[in-house]
Image (tube, rainbow, N blue to C red; front, side, top):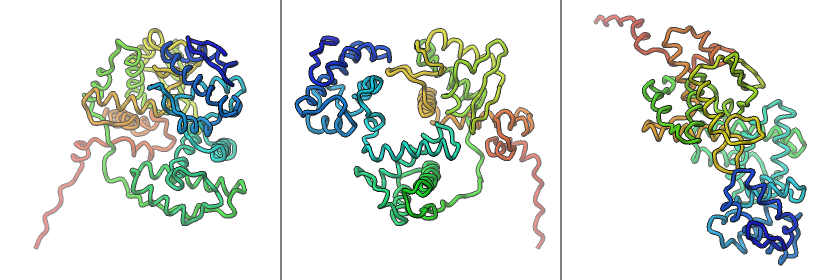
Length: 403
């Protein structure tokens, strides 16, 4: 039996309990929350002992069984996700093997399949890790629709199942999300065939989505609303200083959400006033850093960034402290819109806004393409909306029809 944070831990997890407190506090958890999580670990450990199981048997399936059959008396520790920080500590000691299985509630077989697919995307197809992770997320959504609550059996996946599931997704998803899922699904089906998991390729079973030529101007944010987005960030708080720096980066440099998430301390050259941007396809570019962007980053680094050995610039503000993800960047932009009282937009709309304002200021499309780091100016033309008043001045009057 071991006593940690005033909690008695007995059973298979007792020998490892002494390290729980330090590990949790290092991740930014408060002592009160650490005590709650250790209490949960004590309950799980007791249940494992009664079930004749050891610490090495602690998998996602076993934890799900604990919550289904035994539950927890602690009001803030009632889900499988609550065990993630404990599992992470046990994994670091080489005791438990559960990882994303705990968070996603999938079977070990499916976990192995998707892990292999992720590695295949990076190693065989040359995708970045972030893109491969996004593909895995989209494929997971497909699998949930195909076999909700059941184990995935690849041999049962056929053309009828593919088509039927995509049709179901079309009723539940927006068009952009559906297009992303279909793209990832085609990649996943190629993986199944290439690795011998499927006898034939089912790529042709994925229906083509109807697309329309762009007939509307890209959505942008008016300059007044852009100012409100920044002003709405409460710079008296750590979260506000972080959000203000990110919103300014999006508005002044037009970075993608993933590029913001990948920014590292080594990417900032304060003396030269430049930032290194690691973009799509492993591309790396140096961009001049506007003064207000540099000042906002400096304020965040000096007084708001949590103390950590990691090199990522932007971190979460609540435990566990970790690098901010691209989804996290999107969420903070949504919250900024709500605070500013404007229609909710995502980070990419701010990128389009920069392109449009640069074009309207008189810059040629070649400079817009350089700013957005596009190899093809045609791509930039999709992002930058033309000045409607300027285009209208070029329109010729239509001759009257003579009868």
